[in-house]
Amino acid sequence: MSEPKNTPESVAPDTVPFPRGIRSYVRRAGRTTAGQAKALETLGPTFLVPYQSRPVDLAALFGRAAPTILEIGFGMGEATAHIASVRPDDNFLCCEVHPPGVGALLKRIGEQEIGNIRIVEHDAVEVLDNMLPPESLAGVHIFFPDPWHKARHNKRRLVQPHFVAKLLPRMQSGAYIHCATDWEPYAQQILEVLAAEPQLVNTAPGFAPKPDYRPLTKFENRGLRLGHGVWDVVFRKR
Image (tube, rainbow, N blue to C red; front, top):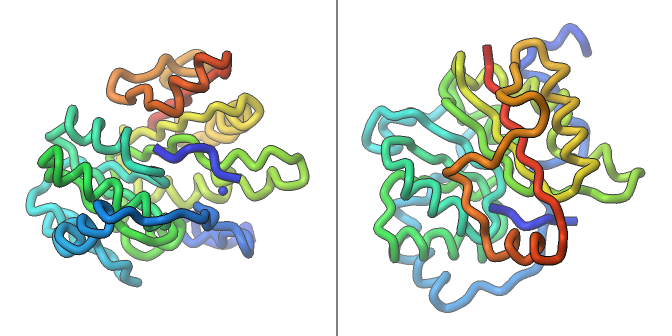
């Protein structure tokens, strides 16, 4: 799970251009620990997937055919490792560009003996555009994306109509999008953006109850103790 990060009509939906300069991440400073560095060295060859500009064979990548969930921005990987552990029958393809986070998740993979995660250390927008075959995803997780609090920066938020237009062709019928944020204005925007897409249907009357598989991380528990809210949004593709 990522902690909040200060992150022409004639064109076919899955080639919709993303606005210049917008990515699924922002670069953050951070130091890779010795344990993370060791995990990168020893486990990276097995669990890191090099970015490529052509579609990948997901069954070959994971060594099995199983529903694949795309996670965009996993921070230090605490929630990702938990979810993969409690959902062993699903595959998790996880995008993150923050090296300490990648190392931290690899360390968790080794410690918890998790086999159903693969990591792409690259911008998720380009992964969507080039690496994922059509209708290959059973779900998408976007947890605590950069809220871009200032109004003049709202256009930089990840969950916008042009981004959803990129996701939809990669999603199977019945696949879900699950977003979570602790910034209420962004939660409302996410709800409005997804509700405006005719191919999607809300699984709840408004915001969704937190699904059992998404854990409360240390960061989230700290926020809740301070009175901060957290909002989940879950939609499915028709």
